[in-house]
Amino acid sequence: MSFSTEKRYGFIKDADGESYFLHQNEVIPEDRKRIAKGAVVKFDAVPTPKGMAARSVVVQENYPIYVSPGSDIIVSKSNACGRNNEAVFSLGRLHVESKSPDSAVDMLKQKARAVGCNAVLNLQRSSRTGRAWTNSNYKFTIHTFSAEIALVKHKTVTGDSEEAGRNQQALKEEIDAIKARRAPKNKSVFDAGGIGVVALVVVALILMIAMAS
Image 1 (tube, rainbow, N blue to C red):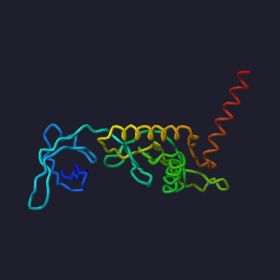
Image 2 (cartoon, rainbow, N blue to C red):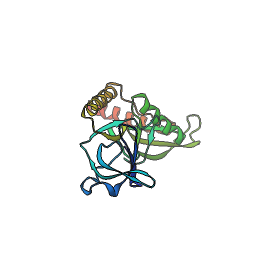
Image 3 (tube, one colour):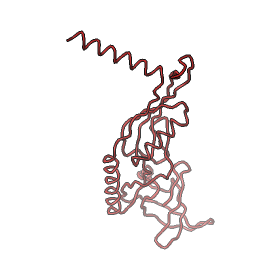
Image 4 (cartoon, one colour):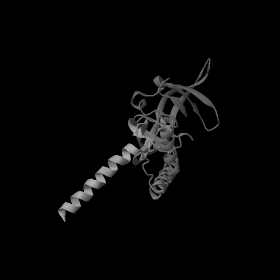
């Protein structure tokens, strides 16, 4: 069954391939919130001038299944990852730096894909001023991006409990495979200004150790 929550209608296809128009108003009131793409339903078939339609629609027992939302990496500034999509696993937050904002986002996407994830969520952006190694008077902008690396799936339903069980097992194996891979590392731009701060911290620590001994 196909169904658009936004448009409030869809089509039911029976075992013989016959298609029936379905409007949300024809679903019994207690099941209207349960109607979704892939749902298994019982209904009365009624002929209309525009073709066959479904009446007195009852939603049967349904089970969630999770499928790939597509091959593209999803990038979002929030938890939102697309209609009927759901983040089923998060690998944690990652930080990258680059002189180019586009390059920074591309790095996050590449790192997500490398570990088997397909989403960069809760994307945050900041910037700092970098200094050239050869000329400390030359300054440039370093763009810092951080995001949650996640696995997103498109959620639908099925009336087949065995299919749902196989789907849940496959999802668990996919998540376990992601966990088994080496976690991606943060990527920073080491400029003269940044290394200067690091050097000062190191010198301060050495002095503290020397004074303590």
